[in-house]
Image (cartoon, rainbow, N blue to C red; front, side, top):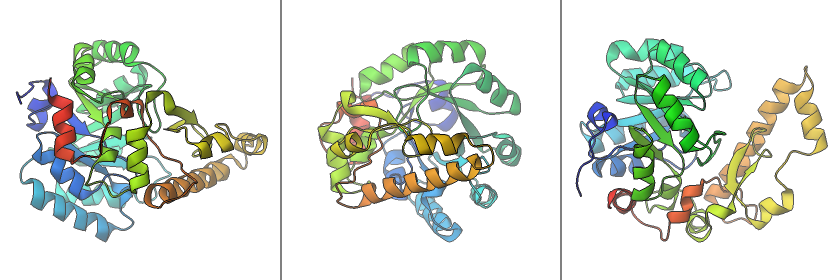
Length: 318
């Protein structure tokens, strides 16, 4: 397979301009190692580990497996993540090659990481925020478009990427909608320096989730992806299973009313998020009819459960 040269591959010394996206509950150390060995960059959310000891053990496993290859850690940087400072310190201690920030200001992360040469990439959904994080010192932005899995953006790649490429001087990485080489080429043609790909890797042999979840990634397609506010209070993309259809996609009148109450809003959001994450966790790791499976439109291109290395090959082979 011929290597692809872009600003992202040069920055991280990759063969191909792809980051295996950090997926809540799904990503693990083994997946990161296999992704890095395949010539792309693997990443994992710090929140996938319940304690700092578990997180450090995973980083030891990753470092032992990838050698000097680049891997990344995703940090939730807003106040909802009460373990942020602890997780950031661990990333600094291990000098992880790059960090992906989500849901908040990356300023604290950038200030801690830049002196050590740790790259910081920031999730963005619009030009205003992209320019703000660039001014703070971000090394790249990750453009989350409306084809992404999880909490997707509102703009299509064709709308978002040209705007960001024009407004920013740092590399723009596209997140959402890539499931094969055609999709990769599409994003590169729009000016992206690389792509972040998640959903196809859910159906990997190395993923720790249930076979039911993996089979759903294979069996369902783009038309089956819907947005629901039931899980976290903000729109999140899931597979439209019979269970999701039964519950509906929108919060009920009581949930909406409580979410708008000024004195209760903060606590309602926290409770909604907690309940939603527990529902995702139950569906991800056990055989259950209560199937809330998070995924993006790129599952359209998944035809079988495969090793991470083969999924990578499918993404880069013309």
